[in-house]
Length: 75
Picture 1 (cartoon, rainbow, N blue to C red):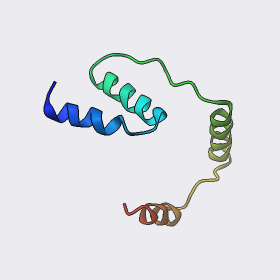
Picture 2 (picture 1 turned 135 degrees about the vertical axis):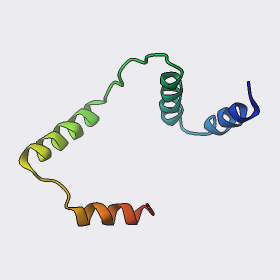
Picture 3 (picture 1 turned 120 degrees about the horizontal axis):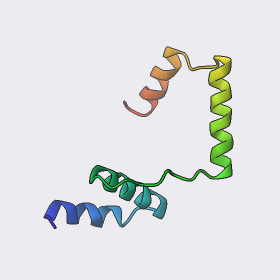
Picture 4 (picture 1 turned 120 degrees about the vertical axis):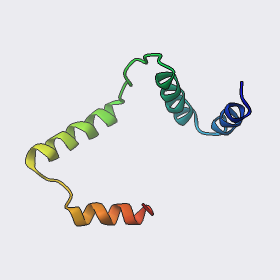
């Protein structure tokens, strides 16, 4: 194992379990190992359904709202 990979593992080990799992899935996908689809919680499924409904209604953020969101997060 390379020093950089060891450093990455050490850093990721300090993150919450859910973030560790997400990063592990990404790593495995990058290594060519298929991962099963993520299982959404009932709350996540409800949020996704609401987002789909908003899109269907055309209730989308304006370009200005999107720019403001990115600016808020320093992007």
